[in-house]
Image (cartoon, rainbow, N blue to C red; front, side):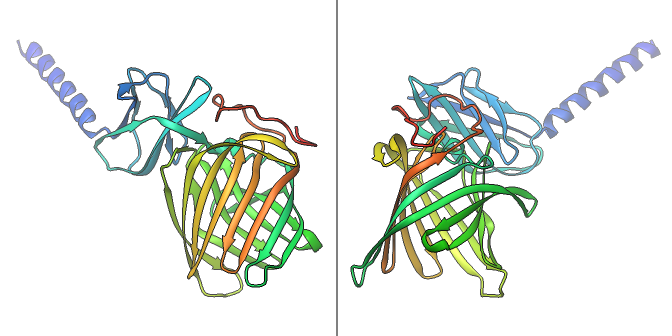
Length: 317
């Protein structure tokens, strides 16, 4: 009798232990719909970390998630068009079950539009106008990925920028499973770093603005400058430039640096990069168009990014 009672007691303790384990579990559940219906086969990614799950029954479960703040993205290619969703600022606290509901819409896959493999290179024709005088000047700009640099524990690609007349500087960028990041730049001996870096999530749904805020810190002792930015995927457009005709995603960007407001539109193409830029800032207007490019080492993508063909430009690969 005593042995039976002891065995029963041990089973009760074991069951209680399992229940306590379940109660203390920290997980995140993402429910994905399209047109109001649950959608299977959707890749859901949790960042930071870049862990990806695929929905079954419209649901993806991330078990044993560390407490913190996360960005959740979802993506699926349907009929040659990428559909995606984005939820930022998802807070996960210990011993909780977090549910995130997202609805798929047309989207752009950001990492493919910023291919930053070593030795990738782009040549642009530039056009600059002084608003006050109407003076217009034309020139060229070359961007080349020349190496890597570690910033705040992250590995960034170094992009060497050279403009007409030999003016040059370096940019620090990264492009990967959690999206695109801009860490800062270096001109001569002066480095300006963004704290924190500016980030665009890996999936950017149509007409859903992403806001960013940072502080520009200079190595020469200049005062810190606050910066705010907002980026929107404004739609898909096919444009023709000297390098060819490309199916692009247009990104509209607003920047406020200190007390100066800038507006910029970028046309970016998967496996190519930036095809065209139009920027307006106080007293100046700037345009550039892709003339030649050489892009290597692009990772396989999760399917077509936006509708339409992509044609390589001169020197493209």
